[in-house]
Image: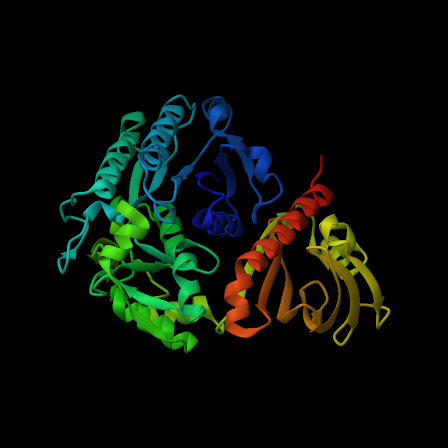
Length: 457
């Protein structure tokens, strides 16, 4: 069975791609730049350019479509140009996809598309369900136009089973809305937004992924579903939970007028109230893993501490673990997958073979400053994982878990890094932007080198 996936390079799309691969589906990812993502995604797939989609669909059979493509609505002010991009990334992309499907020799059985609870607008205390009327405002208008375009897939072939998931705030590790919300609370300057009384309707990333797959595999699933957890939470209560988790102070709420000054029209995303219920999914017995916010946050945040950052990098390589793991346990290979601007060199290893208890000494240069680094292999299991922790070096804490997972005849290589800079909170706030940027650049370089080394030309 083959699934066509748009938005497969994004936060939700990567998780859906892995879930599809684990269940044995072949995945075809549509992206603007296939070369950019070759060998870098955490699941096996074929990459197809949007420009070539119609031609490719004449060659291959597609059983299901999952449509996620769309620019983020948060994180930047809404200039007229940004608003146009948000609209076109949803409406025009959907039009392109459906036009291409119309030319395909074999039509898909199922078309599952993302939408958003933004379609309901700002609704205060009103309890919203799938039959509730759309609201007003820019995002509501975008969603209405988006869904109108999505429904045209029925004109391609009436028998296509259509599901539209109106997605709430997605809680997950390493991306989504929480990636934007978390830093202030983790670093001690978190606050509620506006009145704090506005309702937030959320869903855990695992439940969202499962709902997309449920729509594909449940032949009775059809039409609109609110992709949210049954429990909504007020922004003020959510803010208290985050500050309590990190044991950091909760500052006075940010006034609505200040949000307007900082974010312009986009501030409406932050202060709109939407108490959305997943009535249809519940009536049709969709099984949630994370019904309640406390369990969801415990899973996503576990176990971060104040001023500590956790990042996860994943990629799939088309070789079995028995070939991949030995490459990583040879410390000399670390030199060829580390950016040259670090001038990285392994000096010594305390044991002949990498094992629990091994000490590794390196030298490197960071922003022109030479330094030495020593790590301890804290845990080791052949073909499964190993963990290195900093004993001496530039960080107050560095804990790096290398994980290896079999998938579709290949291996997911996963780096889970927890780090904390020195000098406490002041040092963190002063240097975090630079440190985060450096860590990301290092692992992006590593991923590109691994893609070159392990993918056939």
